[in-house]
Amino acid sequence: MGINDNRRHFQPEKKYEIVKEVIIGKNPVSEVCKKYGINTGQYYKWQQAFFNGAIEGLRHKKDGRETTKEEKLIAENQRLRGVIAELASENLELKKSLGQ
Image (cartoon, rainbow, N blue to C red; front, side, top):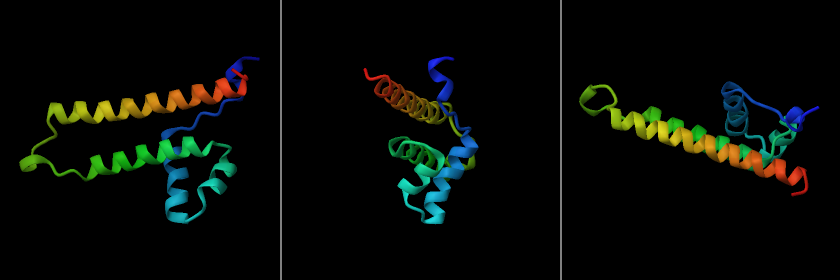
């Protein structure tokens, strides 16, 4: 049995549904986190990624043309920063659970 056997992995679609459940359902964050067995800090990271994605989706295209290479790189950079933040949080939680 490995260290990560009890670790839960959520697909992006499920993360979206969890964040949406708090926003639309007006359920308290603590209640939703308890329901899904996640840390509130993790939820707020997902929520930040959710809103960053919404902002990106609402940006106007310049003169109706496609997104520039620079804009695509900026969006990818934001996405990767979110992934790094999520992994750092999970790493910290794992260290806490191991008593380090």
